[in-house]
Length: 228
Length: 213
Image (cartoon, rainbow over all chains, first blue to last red):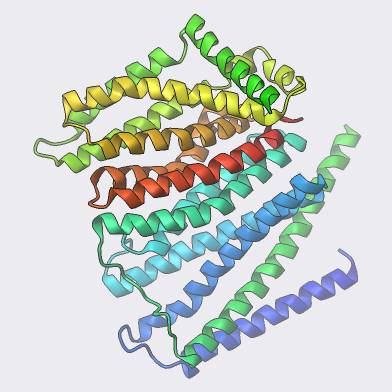
């Protein structure tokens, strides 16, 4: 990693730390306590930014996959893989934080009535299989393209599943829990926006570090193959 | 365009003819779906609702499709024929369309036995259920064919296909079960049609990249 790259990563990491600390401070000290849920609603400021960040990662992964198929440039393969890798981590965090929130709010660790959680479970299962696909296919153009097509399936599956989970709610659960009313007070919106910006900066930092690591790994493997 | 249609017809005919000669897949699917329905009878405690039975029918359909899909590229793989198909002077999406038509045909044939068997064992069928099954077949076959081609290129073929396939067909199961039991089946049928349209286009456009070396 060159010095300028390292400096940029360091700046990004500092921005992530600053924004996250600021966002959490805003969430606890500036945003008012929720009238219904009280203090437990504070997890909203972590949970929702993490969920949106996971979507962003899957979106970037699919975009890089599309670029790979389009331009046939091999570097997009690792970029797409890294973005999806980050997306799965943040997806898992969404499931964990959502589950904690469900436990505090409704007394159950899991509730099928909470649509976002169900959607993330489907996406988590789907993208976990992405790793299975990658690890069980031999490295090469074939694997790159299969992974890319699978990543594109994923980004289409997100809205389709969203719709499916939404209409599934009408079979058995006519009433649906919603946390976030459409109109958040300005102070809450500010806190959640700062947290989201911090989360995006964090994932961008992690993405850069992980991508550099994966590139070095791939390079090392190539060199080793040349030696043997 | 007529060349394209002729290619597709030839490829689909090849699959159906191969199956007619070897009888590898379809008898297995038929036997599996009837066995599954029998198992479901014992899995459901006495007095279970018709809704639960309908839900299990959808599981039977999905797993029967999976059984057929694991064999979808078996002949090509064993004889290295996929390379030949890819090298043939036709559009590669024609391979996907031909194969998807073949898979859909197997699935429909299996359901021609499964649905009457379900009506005999459990309860009578509504026309919405039949329509939902028909719509679901298209989406399942379209996606399943692309995923089967991906899985065929990997080392963990039979293991990988269900892992990739099941999360993708969760929306199909939601739409199918909804159309079969909900009071407003129309919106669920429309959802299934939307799913088919979206994934058929995506699969048609992306299959080329899955099979080219």
